[in-house]
Length: 326
Image 1 (cartoon, one colour):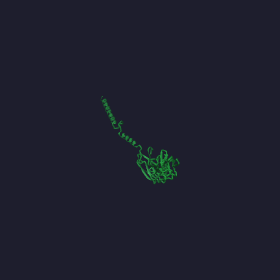
Image 2 (cartoon, rainbow, N blue to C red):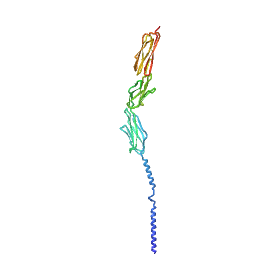
Image 3 (tube, rainbow, N blue to C red):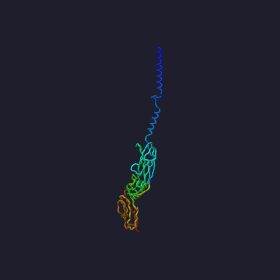
Image 4 (cartoon, rainbow, N blue to C red):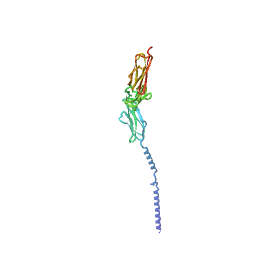
């Protein structure tokens, strides 16, 4: 009986030891269900790095200008990745240093002397290595010397609405403008060119009795050429009075016009017409001959006039003849 009780006590004691052993193993700090704070922090840092690695690329200036003598200019590249630089096209007169880089860096552009009378330009391209971004800087170089000539020094227009074309011979950029009192003269668009080109000059109708002048100016910023613009009056007559002696004679009246005109005479005294005019109508600029007989048969002076009409304009020429001696 005592042996059985001893066996039971030994079994119970062994079971308790085994239970304590399992409990110790479960509390070793390696709980598989626990969240690892260190791993969470690492994942967040990796996400930030991925966002900040998006390619960025910019240049400090849009263009670089050189004179004919050439030289070197520079601009600044701002980037967070690798990039390549090159002069586009076949511009062997342009070089870029360095031709590749990484991050922020200065890029130097050199151009050789331009011995040509023609200005030239090219483009420096900055492109990320993966080809996703590209920026450009325009490179311009002036010609060795400016050349500017015009085909004629004067332009003569009709009195009506009119236009004429002028040729410009140049090796650079130029602009044209017309200066007139009243803005009756203008240059048709485009009022500029690059190299040889043409300028169209427009004038409004001159519905006045006096002619007018304007100036066409063409300049490339260094050289300037001017062209005189002239437009006659719609209608003009000179002189506006003629005086004759007792023995008569021939007087001359000049008509300036590019339109049709006609003459009406009013020189009758005592039922006798004492003047004649040739021609009585015409077109354009012409001379009138006014004839008065050699003998004034009337005692006293006599007066008359000529009315010259052109469209809506009329100009009167006064005529007079002195009286014969008594």
